[in-house]
Image (cartoon, rainbow, N blue to C red; front, side, top):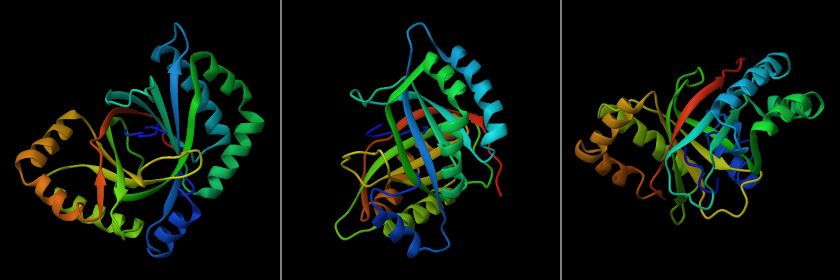
Length: 254
């Protein structure tokens, strides 16, 4: 997931500087932890087998991890040949305290479910964290849909706060042009490794019809001009990877 563009599967930023900078300068914005696993199916296994394990996981989470929300991410349009995976797992918690308790519970109580997952998918290739900050999204966790991940690098002299401000402004401009999307910024954290970019811009749609309408607006309705005007001076972003997202479980929120 060097360029995990749309999953799954953020508590700390690339370093604590990123988190402290983004949160301290923008007290109204709350960062929440998310995790991502890049997984490949074991020989002879597929989504039907994973669905059976997901049922076991949901029963476990209902008892031990009520705040945890998760989605599976299936690659649709991607070119990350070296980091290709069959299915991703993206999970989130309402805050860092919930993340810590979740991890302890999983270590002590999740062994049987972990074993069931291991019989179907190998997720040992990548497990990483990020800090997610909402740009434009409903309060309830998004359901099934389509998600795009852009890997973005900050311009000279720019910081995470500049990226957040530009992303919010661009989201408002695209909404004014008639697009319908949810969006976040993910700042890489634990397990991200030696990456060559600063954050992911994550954009989600309920379906491909909405995505297609946004593409039309971007290409022929003034969208790319707005993007160059607003985001261009702040960060440069890769073309997005596109994933089919399926909600596994919606966690309880305070």
